[in-house]
Length: 291
Image (cartoon, rainbow, N blue to C red; front, side, top):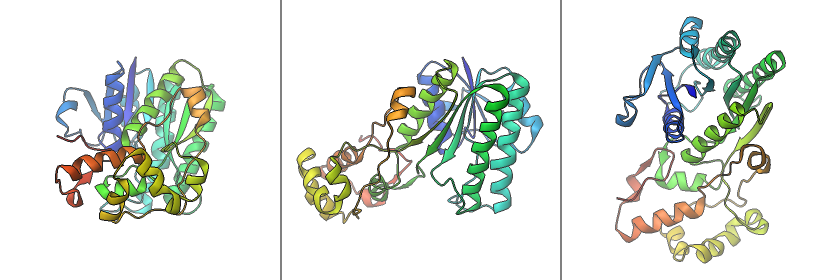
């Protein structure tokens, strides 16, 4: 099966493309510029600005499924205008779905966001994007997964670890959820399906609700030495850990997240024992391997 990934040169797009290749799919990467990653140089690439219908039609030609990740969001640095965010996220999504309709493509994953809502232009574009997916489903009976990703923007290492307890998710979980979704769409196990993509820590409910007080002891139980690490690196702990019901994703997609706060602590412990300065590390939205 051949899968088109729009926004393929971005942070999430590269991870999703790799995961698709590892799962045995043929991948066509589409973006306004090719990925600079050495391991993706040999993958088919087409230049595609989703605001341009002709670009989109050329990109979808001959593929079996589409993963639509191309979008601008408010956290981009340097920032882009609200006009650009709206045009890429709304017009671009319309063009992708129209091209899929013309091509007869009925297996689609749409990158929505937990920012969905009325609080920003970006959030509004995700509301409209999901409604466009709903309309396409009603018109074509396609299999569409709308994934409300939590945040996976590259961040400093320690901040990334803190955010796993709040609204952060490891990029590998984003990629595995996306691949599971496109498989479910291709196998027609879903109709119009929506789920949150977030981290799962495996904590008891009382620890989730009172993490600032109970969390350090729970972490110490599972990763000895955690208390000292939390104090040494002055990690900011939330009063309550953000968690969501991911049971429907497990049931329909066969997916569950694999990377949680304990994995971060294990990684931090290894680096601390080796004397690695983690204060200057930058995480590309996944725990880096210790060399």
